[in-house]
Every structure is written in C-alpha cells, then in structure tokens.
Length: 315
Image: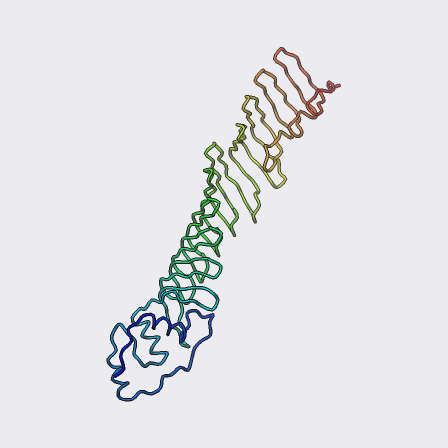
C-alpha cells in the first residue's frame, strides 16, 4: 500500500500546478487519474481527514479542499499577485479566492478581508501604495458601501463610497479641524454641504456637478475679518456684513473672490470706529460712484466718489 501524503507543502505545490486560484488564469481540465488496481483502491479508502486521496482526479481533489475548508498560503500567480486564504470551486475545475483571505497585488496594493468568486466582496481593508487606505464594504472588487477613507495627507472621510470615491452621505475631516459634511458624488461635494471650522466659520453650501453655487452663513479669515451673509457664485448679487478686526464695518453688497477676502462692491454702508459713516456705491472695496460721507464734527461730503476719494458735490 502506498503511503498517504501528509505534507501541506506538497498540497500547496499540487494546487499551484493543477488548479487555478483566480478566473483570470487558464482553466485546467481533463486531468483524470489512471485507473487504480486493488492496492490503489485500498489506499484511497483509507484516506484520513488530514490528507487527500493519493490518487484522485481534479474534481475529487477540489472537493476535498472545499470539504475541509482548506486555506492556501502564499500562492504566487502569473500576474505577480500573492494570495493566502480560503478558496472556492466553480464549474470547469476552477479554484478562486472565496471567503476570508489576503492578497498582495503586483503594484504593492494589499487587501485583507472577504472575497467572492475571486474578487474583494464584503468587508475588508485595502491599503494602496501611496499610503491611502479604505476600510469598509466592497462589491465585485470595488470599494462600495459604507466605509472609512484615510488619505496619506491626514484627511479622513467617513460615509458612503462608490467605486472607491466618496459618493452619498459622508463627513470629510481635515487635520486643521475643518469638517465638511453632506452629500458627495465621485469624490466631490454635491447637493447640500455644511462646513465647520474651529475658528468660528460655519456655513451651508449648495453644490452642483462639482461647482459651488451658493453659500449662506459665517466665514472667519485668519486676520480676524468676519463675514456674515450670502455668497452667490452663479452671477447673482452677494450681500451681508463684513466686520474687520479694527472695528470698522460694512453692510451691503459684496464681490465674491475665491481664495481671498471678499470686497464691498455695489450699494452699501461703511462705518468706522472714529464715527465716520459712508452710504452709497462701492467698487472693489472702495467708495466709488454716488455717496454721502458724514464726519464726526458734522461735515458732509455728498456727491461723486472715485477710487475712495471725494471728487465733487451733487449739482
């Protein structure tokens, strides 16, 4: 009687040669074993739970793996990926990753979690070469469902994900404490978004197709300038109140400047701490057009202004 084989290394080598881990690799068929004699049949009937039948065709061998929930370890595939974990069997004698396992792809991407028919599917943890990481739900090989995206920059997104990007409801937290929460699409804000900053900034924005359309709330700049009002990015007039750190204040229409402080532009009123008050037209932050300045001592300049200077009284 031939000796039964108990060595797991032999099993892995046999699986690597005779079987296929993922559907992308060639399918092995027609590997029937030769008919055994009486001794071979005796050996086959004497199989133990720790070893496969000495002589078995591919189908029997595959079923033996599945019946005992066998785990393959460090199986290197032709595409350079290395897999360790549970396997499954489908028609055509194809073995694929199925159940819990770990795969390291050729580019260095590492996934640990659940597989279904050769692809990440279920709950898992994907770490990318650049340092980004996603922990959460996967569907058919893609990050899809609820999860946490942690970026190498330190930013973190918690919420719904579609094809590896923030899509649906979620919250993005930055290292400086700013949070952006609301609706997302393809990694960009979409719909209603709430922005909160520890410095006092708090506003609600409306986004469409990756573009900010409108914002309402409070915006505080590093120099202490405080804006309270409405910002429109679609051409409509924006307005509100601007309060500077030195105490002077403006109420009225303003020009929206992305990435820099907004400027008084249009009709409005400016007051200073020394008692001056101007009501009229502004342009690019300066008095320009018709306006009236009243000074603390009672002096009045009512007429045309250009570039912040009084030119002429009204006729």
